[in-house]
Amino acid sequence: MFTERQQEIMEHAIDLIAEKGIQGMTMKNLSKRLGITEPAIYRHYENKIDILLRLLEYFTATTSGIFQKQFNSELKAIERIKIIFQKHFEVFVKTPALVAVIFSEEIFRNEQVLSDRVKQIMERNAAAIAHIIEEGKQKGEISSAISTQQLTTIFMGSLRLLVKKWQMNGFNFDLLTEGEELFQTLNQLINSNKD
Image (cartoon, rainbow, N blue to C red; front, side, top):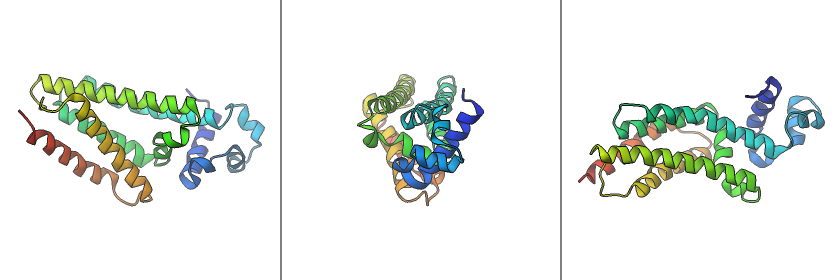
């Protein structure tokens, strides 16, 4: 998918984002970090937007397998959603700088191509969660008292808020443990509202 040099540039871009935020990930800073000229970077990426798009593609490729595996799983719907949560948290723990890219739609609002790509990712993830919730409802595993759309928003919003809180606190708490606690709370909410 990526050449060795493209991968190297992306890894350094992620490091820069982790240290300086998205605004600090400039072509000038990236060239200094890599020890190459800016034109050398342009041989592999058109511009900063292109690099950020590739980072979003990387995230999409990483997480699409998570969803696909859960579509084909025989586990109960709530367990499948839990695994999706856990796997996302693991991706973020492994590469915290991805959080700055994935959850930066407010920064991307002036870059339509980035904004559109983040929207596509969010819509894809919401559709996948909604599909699993619907299957759970059909099997009587999830209450039909709450709409699928609302449950999807509750799940995705909760995940997003926890990850943003983790980022804003300098990644200084255990996201996996906090994620487990959050999921248990969401599970109790669903079970307490069962028909």
